[in-house]
Length: 142
Image: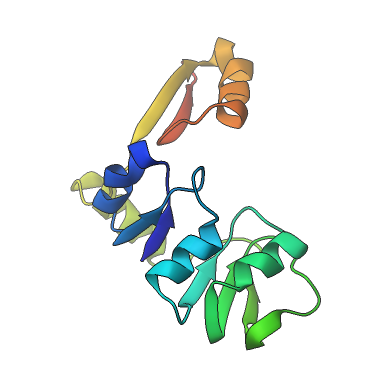
């Protein structure tokens, strides 16, 4: 798996399971992925782009590969890439119990990058949108 990350977060992302990383601040992500896998990857998961940007991301997929996005895609994609739209996550029976069990026994890794008291919730949203925070942002209500 190839993931995007800053150079300072590359080891962290590899610890989460990525085999390789592309620094999105220093290189074009599609070109970086194609340098690592010249024929294209099997699946591109793009959580950011839509329209032409999403079509650009599809260039990293191999012919016949898949593009996965929760956003609206372009009408046509180049290179025979099959678009796949994810509107929302709907758990299957047993998924939530499995996640709860993994969380309870330490098998589910979640890193908290920042914590804010409820009174600072507006600042939490501003920091989430404007800063690079590695991990989850938590707003506590007590």
